Image (cartoon, rainbow, N blue to C red; front, side, top):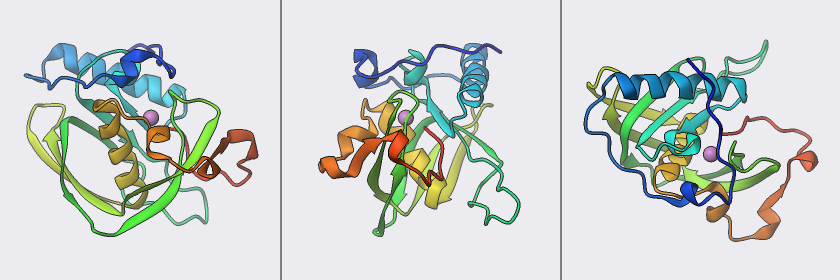
Length: 177
Ligand code: NI
């Protein structure tokens, strides 16, 4: 495994629409391993291949295990790897929540997302999977799928009052994606 360089906005490669992966082969698996190492080193909770300069539709997410006495997020402590992720169901219910991004260091903001989603795609072995996600995991997956379409969380914030420097976020409860 190797840590790869994370692209920082406004790198134009972050705006590309990533291509679908034809086959989950050794090269893609190497990419996934490197993405995992890169995300963990950066203390992120999600990463898209686009962010390491590979314009392919591959996303990973890993929510931290809860600290003592904290309520766990659904799916916490489990690694999710999805190739060619597609949102096949979205709850009508929307929820605003705090987001950051490893490609947009220093900023956090309030983004509206579907409260729960179903994502279909392929796993590390190339088998078809469906991931049902709620809350923070649903948010991270929507954020990462956005990366595959060249969309950053800051692109989803119209109100400048909902975006602020990370130093001002005193009770920061989530990591960067
Ligand atoms: Ni991000």
